Length: 264
Image 1 (cartoon, rainbow, N blue to C red):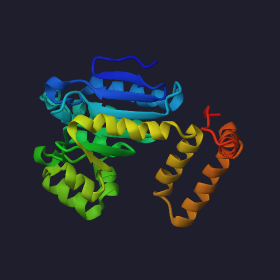
Image 2: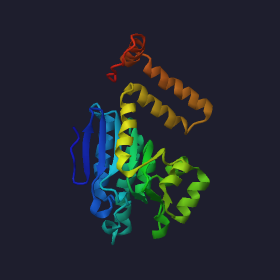
Image 3: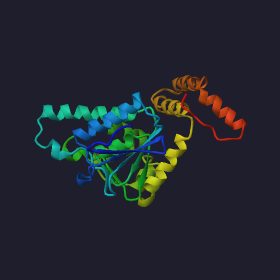
Image 4: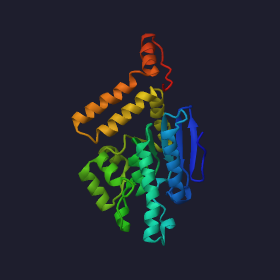
C-alpha cells in the first residue's frame, strides 16, 4: 500500500480506487519540490506496481483550493540554475501523471491556478465543484506554463481558447470550464467527491486490462492520423482477446450475472 506523506494523503477506497489528496492547505495546496517528488513516486509506482488499483482520484484538502500552482515562496531568490533544476522535477511530475496507465480523475474542489490548472488538465478528465476557478497565470510573473499547460489545455479547450486564457492569464469559472471542454461535470461542493467516486467505481468495475488499452488507444490515437489511430486501436484491441477477463465477461453475460474481473 502506498503510504501517506508530508504533502499527500493517500486512501485506498473499495479495494480498487486510490484517493490522493494534495495536503498543504495552509498554502492553498501549492506544490513545492517535496510534493512534486511525492506525486512522481505515486504515479510512477502505479505505472510499475499498481497494487490492484484501477482508478486514481486526485483532489485538494479543504474547499478553498485544489492547487494554487508552484510555491513561489520556495522559489523566491532562486538562481536561474536552481530554478531550472527544480523545474525538471515539475516536468517529470507532469510526465508521470500523463503516462499513468490507469485512469486518473480530478475532483477540482477550489482554485486551480498556474501549475494547479496544468495538473488538472493532465488528468484523464475532471469533475469540478461549482466554486472551482481556473487560471493559467504564468505570464503575470514573466514565465509561461511549463508543466504541460500549453499542450494539455489546448487539447482540452482548443487552440484559440487556450491562447486567450494563457496569454491573458484570466480566471475562468467551473461553468466555463464545462462549456469549453476542460471539465466533464460541475457538482455541488458537498457532492463533488461522491460524484467523482461514483464514476470512478463504474470504471473500476470494468475489465482493467480493457480499460487500460482503451485509455491508451484514445490518448495515443489522438496524436496520430486517423488511419494510424485505427491501426493502433486494433493493436490495443488484440491485446484484450487472449485475456481471462474477456472470457469471463462473455461468460458472465451469457450466464446473466455480474462479471468478476481479475485483471488477467
